[in-house]
Amino acid sequence: MIKNLYLTLTRIKVGRFSSLLISLLLLFTLRPFMEGLISIRLLMDVFITFILISGIYAASEKKEVLIISLAFALPAFAGSWSLLFMENSFLKVMTKVSFALFFVYTAIILIFYLFKAKDVTSDIIVGAICAFFLIGLMWANIFEILHFFHPNAFHFSQGESIDANSFIYYSFVTLTTLGYGDITPLISSAKSLSVLEAATGQIYLTVVLARLVGIHISQSVDGKSP
Image (cartoon, rainbow, N blue to C red; front, top):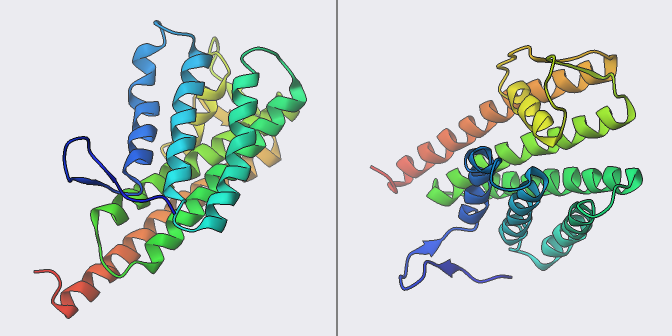
């Protein structure tokens, strides 16, 4: 098991999920402002690599969990960087599958950690946020795989470029049930998956909120919180 990390020259502990949350936030906040300075594909690979490394650390509490995480992360990492130098349809699909499996597995690990917790800590809250982001990224890869096999599965606004960013955007718009309508599912499988993701997002938020409230009430009863 990987030991606790501390900020340089301090004794401030970095939680298991803090680096993962930072990596995820950088993907969504910093990347759009750097698109004109560096290749978008290279930029995506850099941020995704940070997420993979942080996700492995987050799932490193048990040796067997760490091994499974590496089994999903290494093919995703190798495939992602290989696609910068060559275009291969089979490699692209397998890389997206590896990413989807890694994201969902890491999200499950975080959710189990949340439900085993006895106290509401900052690490618990950060883990719950990370799991939500990972679920969205998992669905983004699933939609991209579907689009690969069915190019007409989605309707995109005229003039919009279709890439991984498009599916990340569509996934989180669906997960949060915003539904802007600039990207719409056309075929039945795309519609069904979109409905399933929207339901997943609502169920996750409801269950996690109920769990955090339950833990907090338990803390209050035990006299651990004011």
